Amino acid sequence: MYSSLKGKHLLATQDWTVEEIERLLAVASRLKEERNLGIPHYDLLRAKTFFMLFFEESTRTRNAFEAGIHQLGGHAHFLTPKATQIDHGETAKDTIKVLSRYGEGIGVRKTFGVGHAYMGELAKHSSIPVVNMQCEDFHPTQVLADLMTIKEKFQNNLKNKKIVVSWTSAPNYIRPLSMAHSLVLCMPRFGLDVTLAHPPEFKLKPEVMEQAKKNAELAGGKFEVADSMEEACKGADIVYAKGWGPIMHTEDEAEGISIIDTYRKNGSMDWVVDKRKMDLTNPGSIYMHCMPFDRDIEVTSEVVDGPHSVVYDEAENRLHIMKAIMAATMAGL
Ligand code: CP
Image (tube, rainbow, N blue to C red; front, side):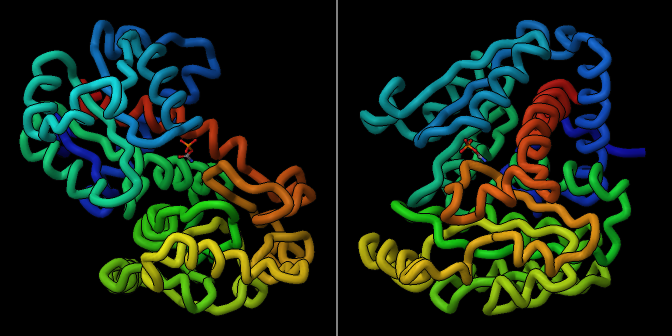
């Protein structure tokens, strides 16, 4: 016997039980299989509305939700602070009180500043499910698609498979901690051993590290920290490497970008995923990235386009997971 997911907010995977996540993944797999068989889904959320409030840009998250709700028979409203009265100061409470009267679900992306607190405030006053489409700390819809992909690639046999969550030197701007946080928190709950690798300036938040350790202990798995991508890749089954900012080290953006760039000085490959590092991994290992990636900066094209890479399958699973999230939280599927 289980309780329905209808009306449940998704602000972080840590707020959902393992059983609830497994149930969501089962819905996503079913929807994926049916779509591949050409079975339509437009009765599941016919005439329902999902609001998508984006404070920042997106390719995958926006289009997976928008295509997804269309396939489910509903409609998405694309909103920005400028396209609403949010930029004029309308509060989270007033915004959601009104939108709750018009539609059946809302997703929000706000990755800098107080995104998670803003979403919490929306959820507090909302009568419709609020979905975190990425905040400064968490990216639940991505990590759920990642988990779905890993389960598919390893035939559901995740126990003590080693996932490396590594930092890379991604240029030009400060990326949030949300992917690294989400991965180290979520993956141990499903039996994976996690090795987090990063240079000293790129620590994660202490409360997240603490919770990740607890999650690993509870599941009987390992959570280790390394200071070398190469060392971490030895014996890995999954390499998931992406950049994040030195947010725990400095609040100065220019200094942060300069620190990131230091790790690419003189053509250093220390924090780049290349064939040499993938050759250190276990047979059948996979390379993952949430995308967008900086080709030949974070990862070589040889790896992205090579036999280990599952990045496009991973991106496709965003669609199936988004549909499952909307169908489950808006209609109780
Ligand atoms: N991975 C991801 O969230 O991609 P977008 O930023 O394009 O949505």
